[in-house]
Length: 223
Ligand code: SF4
Image (cartoon, rainbow, N blue to C red; front, side, top):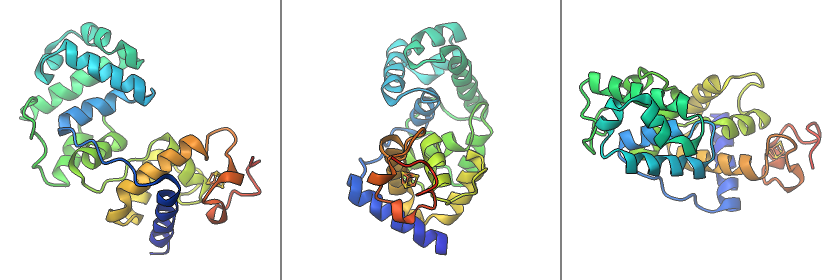
């Protein structure tokens, strides 16, 4: 409960600093899954370019599932790591189809209850807890907390998770602790904070709205 209150205080501070986060994308779940796979190790801009290129090249997700991996890789090359992501995308889509999911139905997956949907997503090749949580949160407004590299770093510095916790462990611990109503705003706020202030190399602690809540102040060579 103590951690939950602290997380709420952090969410409130970040909201005041950065304003209300933009509304979730609310793409259909399979679209969100594809977008999230494309987002791995690239910027949002390049992810969006790759997604738009893929949609232009293939009329349906079923055609992506059936296309040669090399052709899919060509379509998504602007997103980077195309030869890793293309087979991953195809495998995830094929696996969904094998599980009886209609790939091009806009409501596919949307009516599945938790935790069945969580288990289905995690069972897809190349899909981990972060990707599964993105689908549930951004597409379906379900309070699952994705931990990406920024959230992971900031959460560790703030002492919200143990210093050596892997992202997967951090996600499980934070998921347990955060009030459902705070999940979206806190996720968005921590990402923005990690990109702009609590950056990887030398964080701007002197400009940080969370400085008085952070055990790293005075320890981390703050600017
Ligand atoms: S005080 Fe520094 S290390 Fe702590 S959250 Fe802020 S920027 Fe990050």
